[in-house]
Length: 157
Image (cartoon, rainbow, N blue to C red; front, side):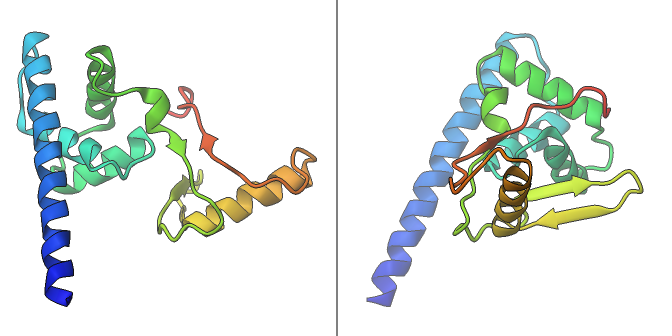
């Protein structure tokens, strides 16, 4: 029985991997059609984005820069803009955070303070903080949070 579950999980992972690879190939083809060179940095960024765990450009930057220190924030923003132009992504979806109070996702939110302190919140912590703020400011009264969409801030760059 356990072997069957293991085999099924491997098959699902394999199918997901193949789907991601097909998406990657389509995007690479569209980038080439737009006259873009397919560099190592662009491939790293594409892999990070297709992984789907990032909710903003800075998260993409942090993950990608761990793989290649030469990747800068400007490179990430340019790549996001190009991917948006060719229709591969929608920036509206990148910033959508849909974590309920029962969600077990770790590092659902990363906050950088002006003294370079970084606070990483689990989905439960993120939900609790947003909910407390909404209640304290009079915006919510017993409702549950369905999702939070944060627009990118141009002044922080």
